[in-house]
Amino acid sequence: MPTLREICKEMGWSAVGSAQDVVHALIEKGWLTRDAQKARGIALAAAEDFRPVPLLGSAPAGVPIESIENHDRDILIPGFIRGPVFAVRVRGDSMMNAGLSDNDIAIVKQVERAESEDIIVAMVEGEVTIKRFCIKRGDFWLVPENPRFSEIKIEDPHFRVLGKVIGLHRYWE
Image (tube, rainbow, N blue to C red; front, top):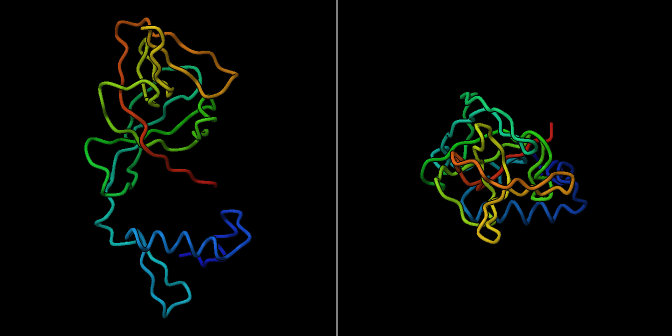
């Protein structure tokens, strides 16, 4: 496990106190444990507190494209997240202003219906995309979070909500 200074360096923080506060909060929530007798005494909580979900390929956050479902590997998520959940790799930058970047892994709760303003993984005209779902004047829209992309009015009678984005894994490598 990293030291507090290594956490600061990775997060871009200058004060070790910032890392201490975050680690303390994660210990209180039960996600981390700490052995005060060790220099690198921070550890993840018991493995039972996490569960695997399938990473099912990628979903474009840009122009919708055909997506092939493919169980690439499993991703660990916190055990408190219940119900049918899957993960997809984000491709593109149409959702960057919502915090979804290219190559992130979106954690998606499988649902059939979405509320206006939810960020969803959708199937439209046989292609998959990640967008914000909006209802405007009785019409359904898929709205990007990047001004370089256009909104998509949903006119496809076979449109499907595959799931609602509920979380995110991001790696900086």
